[in-house]
Length: 324
Image (cartoon, rainbow, N blue to C red; front, top):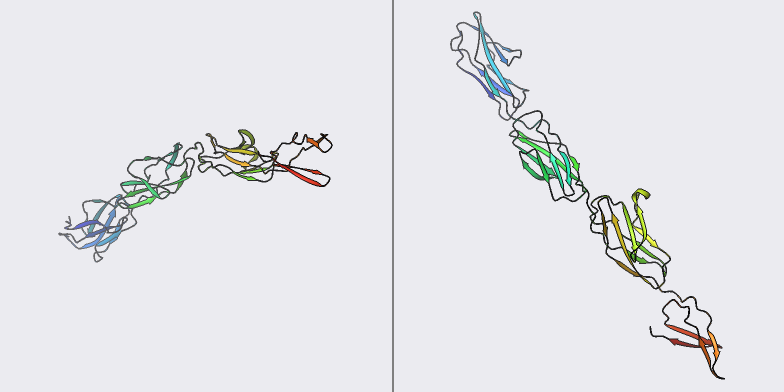
């Protein structure tokens, strides 16, 4: 029987996959030692001669895994095996971390949930949830709800799992909250094109909070234009209003609509250009005396504000001004 006075198994510093084994000649060899055999678990043992260095570094091991080692010394009289020594390799960063699963709870919240890594290379010490590169949660829970988000906006999430041996990131995943009623529709811009035409242009709401599906244009509270995505495939943000009255002020409002509701702009006002009077019939003339003629009927069919009227008699021009 051989007595080993020293047999040590230790972790190699700064590694997670290596173990160092050291042994010495038995205290009582009871003969000439011919060989040593080192065995890990139930694997095929490594053989060493009596003059070989009595040390061996076992590499390529799994992190955070238990391994057992024995050393056997053999002489012509037989072999003796040491007591089994067991140790666990160091922790390493998680092998693989799955991306979080996202769920839109409402128009301002997203719930992220995740699983523990399936292959354990250490005890998880913390999880970090990042949204658009910023840590929004750190702890040991397996889900977290991010609140105060912008409706229907894309957000990118990534999960980091850590052990004492390091951290591993998941892949990125994108999610968005539910849609909501649009907000922030600026008043339309009005461009007077002529005495009878006004061009109306507008922009998408500052916060569409979803997909804008239609626009309405109202003139003096009357619908004059509407367009839907389902009909046109795209939405214009311009409308030209024809056949208006010259010199007339009009009020325009734009309405934007998505799946959840509508938003209405404030009112914009514009006046069409004035134009030359139309519908003026020849005046009626009546002799008043030998030297006077009465002119009448000039304003009967006028539809515009008249500032002045000019009468011509035998090449002589005379103008009359009116206070409106």
